[in-house]
Length: 185
Image (cartoon, rainbow, N blue to C red; front, side, top):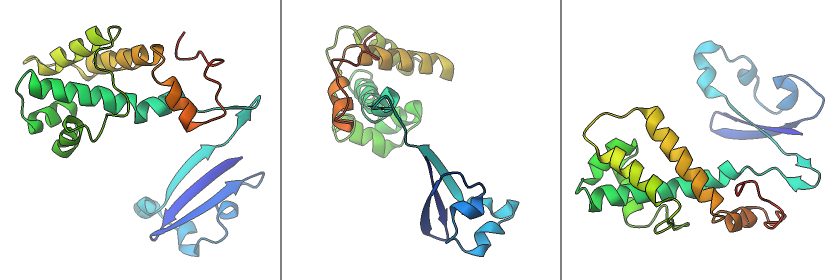
């Protein structure tokens, strides 16, 4: 079953699609104006598609979903704190380097964000974190690809430690941590 959400005129409309096709069949309660939207007004309608499925009774929650909410903020917080504490950079400089707002840096450094999972002192990821901090602090230009590769390697290394398993279980209680070895392998 595919669920769709549409926002129009400040109103949020939900629908689900079975066999019927076409936008009109999905949202019979939407005003006629939505169906008459032309190219220049397309920003008025936002569609979000998501599918709910179960495969052999298992939930299809993606580890990357949990990582995006927990590991990525933890890595950013670590980098932000290191750049400020070790390299004496200002919050606005760190924000510019990481492509985030100064307010986000403030929240990372004060442990408001990125504190659900502690990645400090984990020997398997220390070299990866140090490499990212060094790269971010260096005076030379670095490519986005280079930084993203290091970031993804670090995220995968954190997942391999098993630290994220209880968080996935918290997100979906039907997950059997002992039977799931996706991140560990």
